Length: 145
Image (cartoon, rainbow, N blue to C red; front, side, top):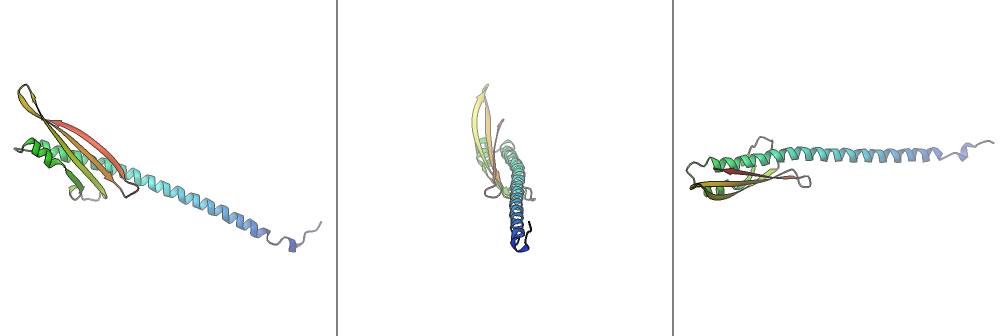
């Protein structure tokens, strides 16, 4: 049986179109995987920054209440509360871009063997990252004097 070239026209076009569609789907899937990996990497970096920013907020609050000098403990606790951002409590060296730390302090006075003591509860709620990929962490520490 003979095949005529006039009857075979178009079959190469269908095969080429099929190959193009398959390659396009593979390319789209690869681009989606790369985008997901970028987001995951950004979340890991923001998680590390958030942890460091939160720890910095705790340290800042503890330093304010424990190194108060002659200041009244309750006043020192009130002064330790605040919002830290890069350049305003957090280092402005590029390590905390887009970070924010809310520091709060609770003071309780009590007596031990007739001696006045103070208990401070410092909390730091840190967040870093752009909208949609923000990482939030909460920290808490107690101090006594």
